[in-house]
Length: 167
Image 1 (cartoon, rainbow, N blue to C red):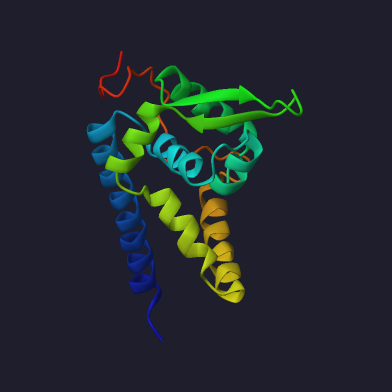
Image 2: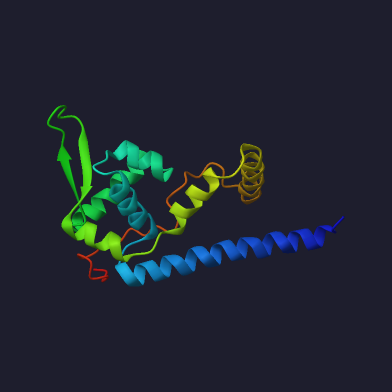
């Protein structure tokens, strides 16, 4: 059996690895596109399933609809998505990529959040429960279980259309 010090060291190393890959990818995506990881992930979801409504985007991104509304607002301000009311039911609003959004999605990498969700769905339920329990313990150690989750590495920035410049 490993000693406690070695186990703690291994946990710390693994957390560092996770933060490192998230940070590196977020920086790269931001430099290449001017978008955050969650914004790019939303564009990918809309590309794959669009036209799509906010609730469905939220479900596919494992986020709350209110969070997705903010992401879509910023994408719409950049001219990458548009919202259109359903002809059959005016209460339903469909989100779809604009011509610029479709061009962008062809040239950018997959975001880690999307890969994580897809890969977790492929894990056995028993293993998922173990992962969930372990991460739950970490959350309790930090005492942050009451803090509402936000999209990973999301920045609230005003952006110009695909120029990658912040204003």
